[in-house]
Length: 89
Image (cartoon, rainbow, N blue to C red; front, side):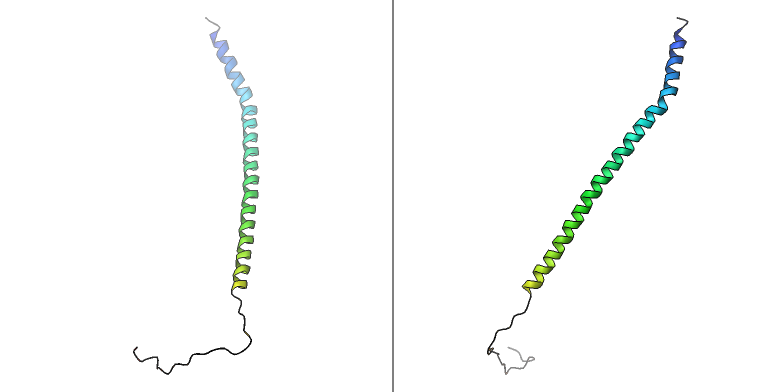
């Protein structure tokens, strides 16, 4: 019964001795996980931005082609109205 304090001293010494390497190992693992997450998220973000830019360019080019003017060769009918714009219908 008298030697119980020796077990406590051993546990305390182990905690003091091993705490720093264990916490360092956990810290390194956390930094590595954070770096991997940033690399993955950065890559995904860059891909999303690139795809969005390509879609925007494609959409602008498609709209410009659809709005191009075309002329028809030959005479064109024009309506001439004799009514003034301020007259009521």
